[in-house]
Image (tube, rainbow, N blue to C red; front, side, top):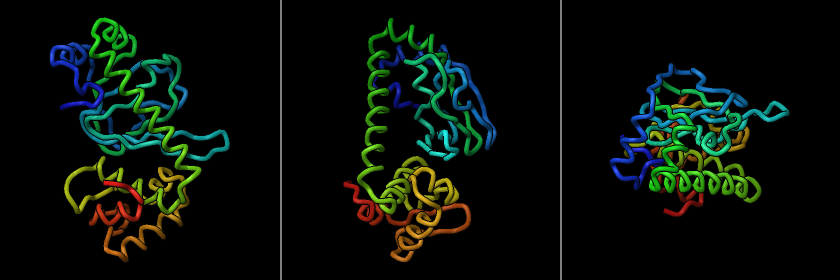
Length: 218
């Protein structure tokens, strides 16, 4: 397994990082940690997919991302060391390698390649949040729905047809849209032969066609 966090890090340094990790497994629907829990570790995903979301002070649920094998979550613990900024839940049976933030920070001080990888990862995290903020003000809900479906297709991987086993409420939370909007966009895309919609899942048939709908460059 290769993780984006450790991309470009020499093999010896990767082995040093993984030697500090403990393995953790999760059942479908199990919460890994809650928003505001103490932040003490970063998780490297080895198996399964995990939902990352927050609940606003007004009770609205905002889904930030879904991450799968080769990705990480809990990375802000590396710099804040205070409390979790989101709730993470296993969408399916999953497994992670858990690295204590203090141990990884110590290793980063000792290994320049690890430190560079952490800086790169956090820069990507900030860039993504900035992109989503701009998108929320400048892109219509229909386009956001199409973009989230494309992103999820990459998370679930493979060649078309790509099955995305999420209900429309979950897609709505990711897109910052209503369920009605998600249903309408998917039904219109289905009419064009881009996706197939069924109970509890969306199947992406034509990524290029949906990318045109989402105004995404290849």
